[in-house]
Image 1: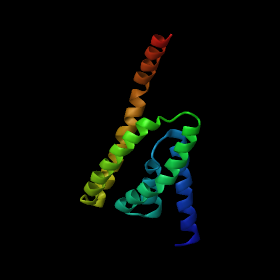
Image 2: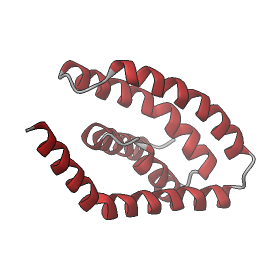
Image 3: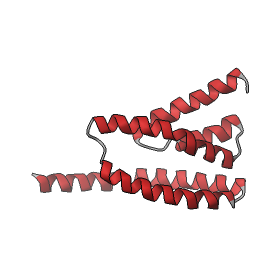
Length: 136
């Protein structure tokens, strides 16, 4: 591995960690496409690598949010349990799918997620206003 490749990987990690901490998204949203498109990783390798390397970023970001009273620890435990079980099944399924199909599935997830965020903005704003009016 060349020094440039090491710097590229560190840059991808810093960017993904920043987005994870800023937006609460898994770094894989940035990390997987960057590894595939910039580093020529296979989709399976990029996803597997992303799952492992996001652990330190997620832990440090979670600790920061916890210290500031912005984490529901009890709920996180149950989500983590479900997430761990789902990750086993998802990983086994991913390994049974061809690289190109997996890449398309990942791209589809990003598109659907982006559309939901854009289209749901008005609905979420109305929900907040309704909840705020009920609290007053």
